[in-house]
Amino acid sequence: MLHHDSPAPSPHDADWWRQAVVYQVYPRSFADSDGDGIGDIPGVTSRLPYLARLGVDAVWLSPFYPSQLADGGYDVADYRDVDPRLGTLDDFDRMVAEADRLGLRIMVDIVPNHSSDRHVWFQEALAAPPGSAARERYVFRDGRGPDGGLPPTDWPSSFGGPAWTRVPDGQWYLHLYAPEQPDFNWDNPEVREDFHRTLRFWSDRGVAGFRVDVAHGLAKDLRAPLRDLGERRSYQPAALPVDGSHPLWDRDEVHEIYRGWRQVFDAYDPPRFAVAEAWVGTSRRSAYAAADGLGQAFNFDFLGTPLSAAEMHATIDTALADARRAGATSTWVLSNHDVVRHVSRYALPGDFTKQDIEAWLLTDGTEPAPDPAAGVRKARAAALLMLALPGSAYVYQGEELGLPEVAGLDRADLRDPMWVRSGGRVKGRDGCRVPLPWTSEGASFGFGPGGSWLPQPADWGRYAADGQLGDEDSFLELYREALRLRRTLVVDEELEWAGPRERTRQGLLHFTRAGGWHTVSNLSDEPVPMPPGEVLIASGPLTGDALAPWTTAWLRTERAPGR
Ligand code: GLC
Image (tube, protein in one colour):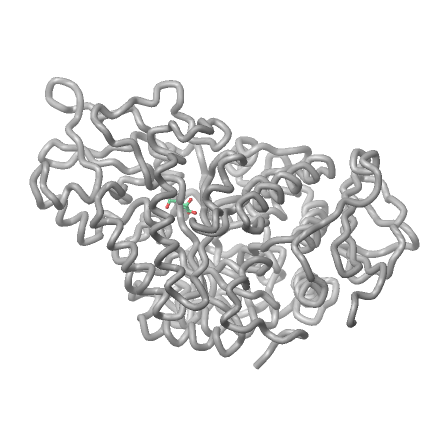
């Protein structure tokens, strides 16, 4: 069954990813087939027709592997299996077959920086003595101080607290995230070979690509003596050195690992694709996206840039230049499972920093009071902007429904390790992971026949997919129509800015793309005259000749050749 207006790309098209729209599924919160309150693989399969109708090209699944869920599944106990609560490998194969039938590609998340402490290798390491081969797969070291009672270095965990935990025989092991997530030792060839095996395992099952978790963390400087970070303890991308000299993050040697992965990917037809999650400075991103590396890298600058024409202009230019340097295409992301949903971010007054947003969450989303209507308006304008840009767009589940952040979750319900590990200073990421509402009424709003592992707000049904389908003013129909148009409009990978720079300073973002269409975003509080052309789609109501504040429109100036 073809869901597209234009023919589905051939499954052998090696470049399918370059301008793909990829939909991120957070499996535990997507659809629950058996009523245990946890989303599962058969649940994903049952909703693939919805995703095909939405018009995305590929589906990326966050981890579904066996896991004790110390970090929402990013603590993997077995890289080559499905968590029994989420299904079986047969269920996975059925999902891939159904995706195939619908013309959708499946991507999976690979978590190579660390495993779960339940992984058989880590259990072996704990049972083995210091200096053993089993310990060499991870990073075990003796402590400092007279009895080795102090951690080997001052390295902090990204979730708060030290990055070292002591085991009963006195050694310490490294975990840049939670203690349940011991870091692998990537200097060990056995670790490298095992990941090649994992990449082949999923590629053989028909997976088209991989999202690579914490791609900038694998290579570490573990030569003795380990170096303290001192003043350089901040892991913020902007604070990292740009010469690869940080002992833990974004070291140049990491690319050698990915060159090995590329050989694995290129043994398939079409070659398998990968996108790096690398929180690095902008100038360092293209190395991850290199053709002999992973091929593409997330551009999180877009997500962090205030919705201002001048700043967006600069961010877009940088991202495009960057991707071009790598021979890749840029990615555009507004939300994912790690950040506050953008409808809610845009509802906050002024330009909010990450810290401001964290503080806002701690007030359960009350201080400052959000302006939900402004959030919706801006999120719709941002969505049409994102979907008009050359490159691939990553859409996080529920974003197409306009779901807000559930900022008021009870402390007792929080599952994100950030909450506990930060000593209650960071509320964490649960608010963007609340299970989806599929139906306006019924058990867990159609998420499944039972409850939901994170409580859904009482009014969740108003965002339900079933209520939005067919309502042309809805978020869902905005995304569907934009994705449908995008398929017919996109002919190349370039954009050209239109209009004088002066207009950008006044809040107008205007660019053209080949094939005779252009996009104009009014990112200001004042209406502006609408440029000439036939309006194909707009993120808000159109009034006369003006483009309303905080609105994006796509227009056609001339008919594309052959259409
Ligand atoms: C990535 C994931 C995040 C996880 C972390 C540790 O940043 O996106 O959810 O907590 O890696 O695996």
